[in-house]
Image (cartoon, rainbow, N blue to C red; front, side, top):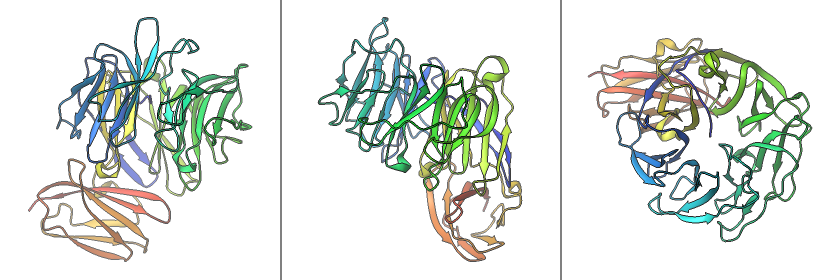
Length: 421
């Protein structure tokens, strides 16, 4: 699905984030896609070349990967509704034929949802299917099919003439279906539909010259409706549904992953040699002054990383990567000394009593969340005063992460503190 490479170290604007990468298993198989069940199940599903595996309680090194289904078969992608439904694209033979299977019981059993069709393209792309406004509305450009009733019946999905690289949706804008790639003449092309694929809107794509191709797209903000798109050599941003684009940065090869989380935009490069292990990260404090940083690499990290997903707020800002194995990146690391020019300070750190004091340079409306070292949300509160004292006498000794969300500026600051008494 998404590709992501290497260990991450960011120094962007006013925040230093020392992110650490942790291997969490499945190194003996190729992982094509990751999907997370967050609502009461807390399970991550990995679609691999040896079927589907899952791990519960999936904070690093705390769980065991278990086989789910389709062992011995290649599973390209699994889409989850976050509750109990899984829909998977499964290779059924060496001729490159693929079927879609559906589970309504967390993967315990699967039923055939869509058989292979004769009009499928020769090889499926990784982002090969998505759902729409509801999970009954489902699209597979690979099969040229769509269903509006959960797979009971399928209709033909008619697309403009183009080479398809991915399909996704924008949940911030009412779930339009977005398909990207290139035109038959090699020009970058994105199309989107807000009426279940009946009418496709074709943006002007001004500012994104060709020949080129769009490999990935992700939405940055619900209020700005910003799209970030990865192409061959340049990352672009559009704030008007793809009609005009402006470059965010240049990259040394194909930027085939764009992933947005809070105020961060992450992207990775597909290539060979040093290019295959490069990650870029982008952060904006005010959504206008963007800064970029390229990371270093770990030679021991496999270069083939194919998928990326993130957990919801109950696990903090955590990213999960899949390639030859599954890896975990914790963005909520570092200490208060690592925040530069911040509006807030937290003390004492380490906390050797029960009262933690949070001081602001200017009053803002913050939502504050405290996470323990397993990513569990243990406390939430608001701050709208210059000084706020929080009684943490009831929590155990250990390492905790504080996340501060500015509700007006839509920005996030993070700090880790230690309780030692």
